[in-house]
Length: 124
Image (cartoon, rainbow, N blue to C red; front, side):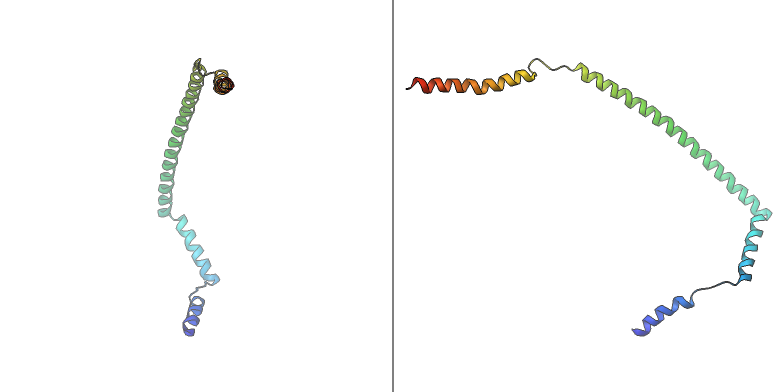
């Protein structure tokens, strides 16, 4: 088991690859040559043209979404106004009065109490 751990720790040390300064400069020069060669320029232009087409498509979609959002906001504001007007038009019925509810509650307590006192008082 001990050899396994030693092997596991040593493998990453030998697995790394480092480049010398000359190799790095050579790679950088090759990248520059590829960037400025005629064949890659046409490929890059095609890529850029494709990107422009995609950006125009996204811009068109975004503008249509903005227009639809504005329409949706206008419709929601109109609906809100209609619901507020409907709430103003809905008046309570005559029996939905809070003072009438108070009178019902008071009568429900006072009348049985009054008759209860009369009945108890007449039996004596």
